[in-house]
Amino acid sequence: MPTVGNAIDEDARNAQLDSYLGEALLWRELRGRPAGLMFNRQRATGKYRHDFYCPDARLAIELEGSATDSEREAWLERAGIATMRVSAAQLLDGATAAVSDIVERARGRLPAHHPRAGIGHEDVVPGATA
Image 1 (cartoon, rainbow, N blue to C red):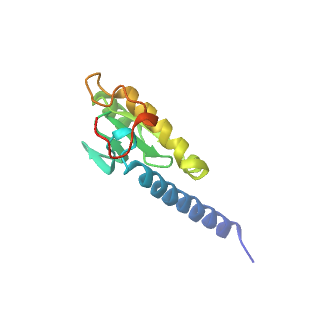
Image 2: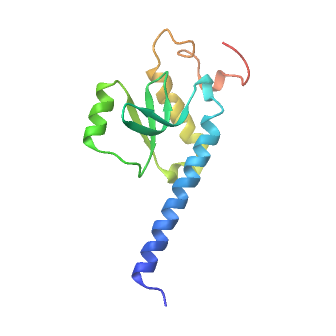
Image 3: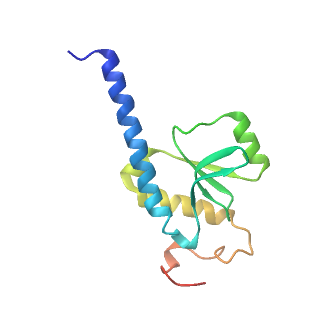
């Protein structure tokens, strides 16, 4: 007979599985350099590790449920790094839409002199050079 404890354990396992699947889906899209932007997976800045990081835009992408605290957020803000949170549910509903949001946010943070600063992600042809 199922118990409340077993149901909670199963819910936790399902949430963890969704998180892993969401991370895998997001990395599949980001490693392809959408809009010519480079993303790193499990990148550290200072003493903090990010699920994904776009160094040119100084944008950390964190999956919902990742560790967060006020000290970390304050340090990142002082370092000029913005944090964008993405839920596993968003990714499971449509990774392409989530990636479009990430690219839009990253492009908005690029320095004006960056070669990709004025290029829309829909205008970038894979394999083309700017």
